[in-house]
Length: 531
Ligand code: ZN
Image (cartoon, rainbow, N blue to C red):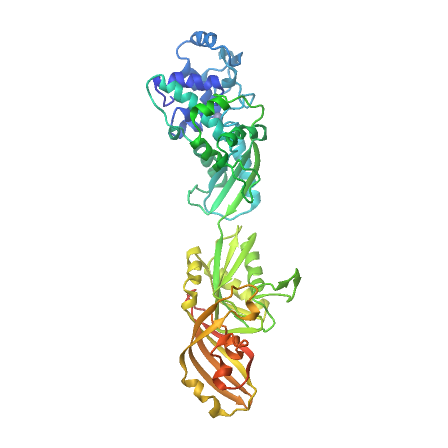
């Protein structure tokens, strides 16, 4: 029994006559129960026919004589109770019915609204095809969700059919809003989710990280939307990365704006019969990114943090980013990555101590489920592969945690040690005064060496503390604790007076920096992991 009432009968007739498939008929009758849609379309078609033309097959004859235009043909229709057995051909009866009801994939007309999406593409065969595609993509997942991308013109066809149904309903003094129609996408999921869930052996979860996206197109009717651009030109602005201005969102927006009478003038209600059904442009599997964080040490003075490329030419053969990420990519079988860190060091600067926090976003990972032991082994693999870097506290984190790494970066402190050269010869007593300097405020005009990528500005920074260690009469080691974002090299040589005050001014001699190490980055993230 279909959940339809007497008042729906004339609507069902109008829909069938207009070339709607059985499932679209239910949608426009606002049937919000999932079960009826899941029946094979043949069974559903029979039930709808019985509902629209009850009791006696002859009853449909006057209707058909009254309504001359749709295509009708004589066909043999099976008795409903024999549909499942498929045996007993003797029990079939001869009926005159609209062609589109009974001739299905085995010959059914393409639905004028869903263009086949709720017909063959909602049957078991196609669900099995999707499942096979997913299996061959070899992802690891515990649950899934389907997303459906429909051609934009389906909204136009849906609108046209709604106008027609609204009119029919209005004749009875009732009203039907556009939102009352059950969405194609929703119905599609109702039907296909349980079948695929069974095929793949995992449940559906609307919040799943693993999305199977099915993209339908229908080139034959692409032109359906074009009239909207004449009526609502401001809805269709060319945008970057969009092949066509007729995006689904733009079409929906235009349909919200257009006056019903204007629509009727420009587009036929019901929409015309298509020759072909939708094409499946793509079945894609997409796993949400996984984030891996840790801290790295960099022991080389010839290793940049990220690939160093100038005018398309590589300057250094590797980078911190690559040494870490290549192992993550391989282990997570990801399509790509984004590396980020709490600040960065120059190519000739080492990062010692507990290291610098970093995070890697792994895009579309085919593997995402790892134990703590697995991650520990992965960290070991990275550390065994190069002596230029070392990674610790490697762990899987959330996206939100990564954004916290970036927050308040400027307020954090960083500790450095620098090997200083002085032009004037010095002894211990010449540098001891530096130990007493606390909370030194300096102003740094954007350094010359980064002016090509940073805006020109004067940035106030604070050197919290300094400590000196005498080496010889032209060298000493300087330990600094500074506000994050302080340019250390510039504080020491002065950058042609662009950083003021600077060590040169404080010592009243030319000073330069020979080596710089980051001793610690005081960001308490990611949490330490015990070995
Ligand atoms: Zn349909």
